[in-house]
Image (cartoon, rainbow, N blue to C red):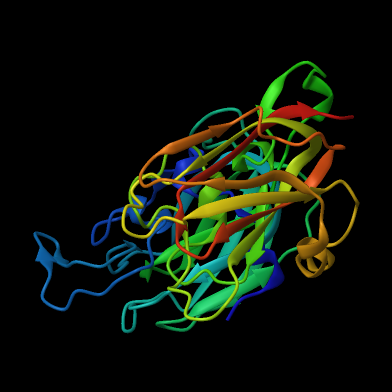
Length: 327
């Protein structure tokens, strides 16, 4: 099950700098696992000194009044559109209910006197389940607090939204990665994301491994695979990096990039991308390498969407589109 807001950036992901900074109790399972980027797993015979090892955050059985909570510092301040509370593999030990609060704080860990605003009212949870909750908030937040009633375990917390960027502070001469996640870039979708999501290509840093990129299944029919991204801000691209790090027997043979500056919805972009002008003509790719293109880039108007085409299939670790914003 998914909702439209899950196409936005997970503001609570560690590669953006998010941290779990506090928990009232994490006796059974380390609070840091709450925002792990990996899908939660269950290992039947794995135990540690505290008992059964669980992939998530789990507090001990509460024997006093009150409830447990956990505080996450978001990787970047942003506007939140929805949250996911994931209790997968927690069956007899999940919390019956939860709520989410938010604050805007300059400290890594908010103090005891910090004012918190409600984001998600107390809501019932089920075991071994994923609950997606849309929210209506136009404010910018830096931290979220997950309250569980009264105790138990949650596998993952995802906080989807848009990174807050003051574009007036970016000069016309400054060159940035227009597609970067930290600059508000988003992966809108692809014809195939079997082995890796489009959003991985615009994450910070180089890919950690072959799973940290966009990879399609083996194509058995004519044609080629493609992915569409929305830039953080319209701009003119001056340098392109297509990085196939870790992709050795499964890198694309060639690639080309199209783009448009037209304003449109995500759905319209996905439907129209095939017809956009070519920004980077077809280029040969190699395994496990950063490919840098500058002179190969065609002259173009400012773009706000791009389509990366890979021929015929395979994996790309990172896509960097360096350029200048056009206000």
